[in-house]
Length: 318
Image 1: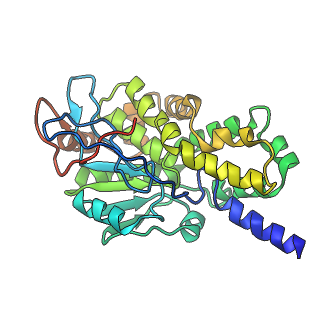
Image 2: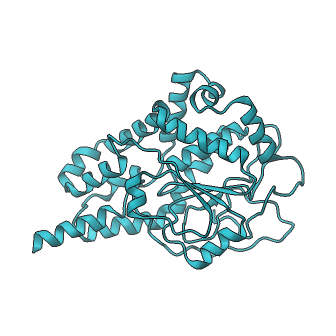
Image 3: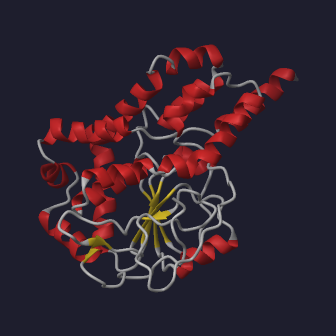
């Protein structure tokens, strides 16, 4: 009976941690609403129970334009949405949701959505599912966790994962399809993975880079996931430690959060494989010059032009 209880505990625990695991519904910090005349807040939170749900817009580009708000949103998993959350998405005009989680992740935590066009577009390796790999490491116990993740092993695993998203043709197709959807959608679109930080973070970084947002700002947007996920990550680790499944939470810090070196590994692989980001967009992602032009026409504005679609009525939590 003790063995059965422990196995059940492991099943529950491993479903609550890592970049690919179930989102924890931590209460969202209340956010103040700006005045109607306030400038759009870059990366503004949606203010829903999905703690890493935010606007992709509001950032300045190198040529002085601004990425429109209310056009594209990014998020962690949407499996914990309340009725109020769903009403918020409807109010924002979101009609398309692209889910890049693996089939295993979706089966464990299916989205709970208002009526939208829901597209499953998994970025995953069927022969080496990251979700299952991390689950196995957690279930193998503290000694095996130390062997797999200690001594910088977790960070190396993440960097390898970010390089894989560039070298794998299927992963590139999914990223490219999402960018093309953004270019052609006539209503707001939201894309997400489980934590909204790795696959979602990479799509966001490529989108912002294609729009001309400076590298420093792209990385700032990427790293913002750390603060947004801090409370839920702490809750996940506390759960595992209290049940004796993890004794060194620091081993999982690189997996639960993001580091500059992860995204840098992807961009380095882009340079190694394609020579330039523009060539990667075209040859690697299938996002040609006409699509890039459509993205920029749709998502960039100068001066005081309003957002293309809707806009958030909440400010940033950062």
